[in-house]
Length: 250
Ligand code: SAM
Image (cartoon, rainbow, N blue to C red; front, side, top):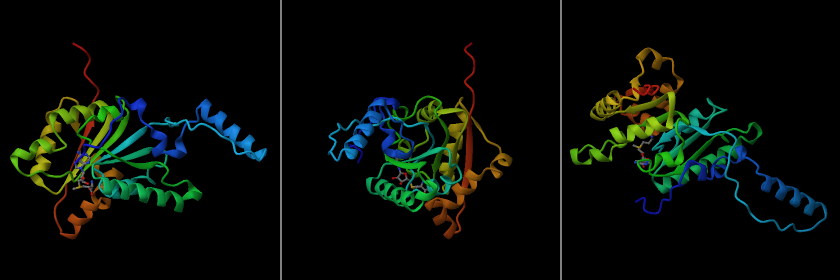
């Protein structure tokens, strides 16, 4: 259930520094507090400083993994995009906590190289209020890897691809940005492809381009679901869609 989830009123209200502490912006307040603390330590005093919350980070999140599960894709992508911030979004609390714990451990293990500071995970229902987390044209890549298929007709409205949700993905993606999809369910593959191809903000990315894209390779081999399908010798259907420029006003 997602009743306990809270959502920021706007992307500016997000406490991003909590997710990416190495990228936190120091506000004047924070700077002053640190100086006070240092001064207090020097004078052997227990400096009493008020705890202002740091919200901002020096660069925005650019890659989102929607329904990230146990984070296999994120942990494989993070070292490939060391200068980009990646965020997994997951609705299940225990799974989100698992990924957050793994992020903490990897950051400690890789402290010498500052590895994995660029990856984080948030609990959220991505079918609600995605534009509250990300500003217009903020993201360059969105991953939809092995989404729950919701086989029955009456359950199709629970699928994370629909005309309305595609409009939200289009809003948060920058022109040229890409939605990556992969599934082992052919019916869902056709559903996703049909919905993106019909949407005026997207065009399908050609096979040749996909072959040279490291993200496609990682999506096939590093997601937990991708590995499961591999073990069972199942098929994987990949389709990617580029956010096109909005047409000029008539
Ligand atoms: N992407 C991962 C992979 O490829 O291994 C996990 C795939 S798993 C089949 C689907 C995941 O999406 C589950 O972890 C599920 O909890 C999550 N999920 C389903 N609906 C969601 C929603 N509305 N918001 C966020 N996550 C969701």
